Image 1 (cartoon, rainbow, N blue to C red):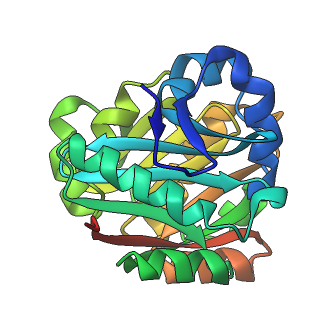
Image 2: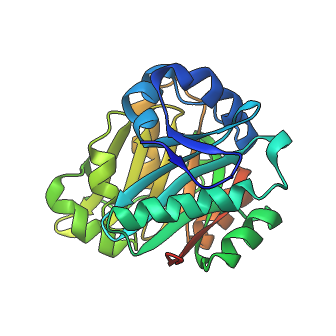
Length: 274
């Protein structure tokens, strides 16, 4: 499906397997420390939900999206430097909103870097408001060892389909995200429990050794999850990127131990415009 609106100089088209080099080039504009996903992940998981913008000079941007029930999620939106300040970002968001409405969504959500003022102004003008905030820290085993000892009787086990709804409610996640993550080979979802208590959740993403999302009910429970994560990635991995949402006590404790801040973001949510 190709969407072309009036005399607009841009055309939006679905991603293809051979778009990977273009995707990598534009991915760099996100300014992330982690490398771009591998070509295999692009082909198997990402291309099908990514739309590229063709302009007069070739591809000038892309957006990756997912419809999660009534919530549409914008995973990434990138505009090439040469195409900025031309209204392309707004055009892409409006086309995305149209696609979400056609898929039955009523609301949408995205994550934005906290100091990206132009993006915050754009998304705010489309009715999106701050819902949560997250901090991505580079965490080592030594940092984890400074946290309080984990309580006894805890169990870390794979997340099952019966866990999706209670975990979503317990940690305020967008409904449908856990089901989606569970269907992807690049995600490993683990829950922390004691008996029937849900005490934590982490997604160990194979692409870049990043834990996102990561939730724990206390510093000690966070230690239990983080120790499990380091066990699973092996001794060669010296650090992990850990994205902690609405957990300032854990962020503060790890920063005090020396963990480096990689990124700070807001999650925005709102009603679909139009």
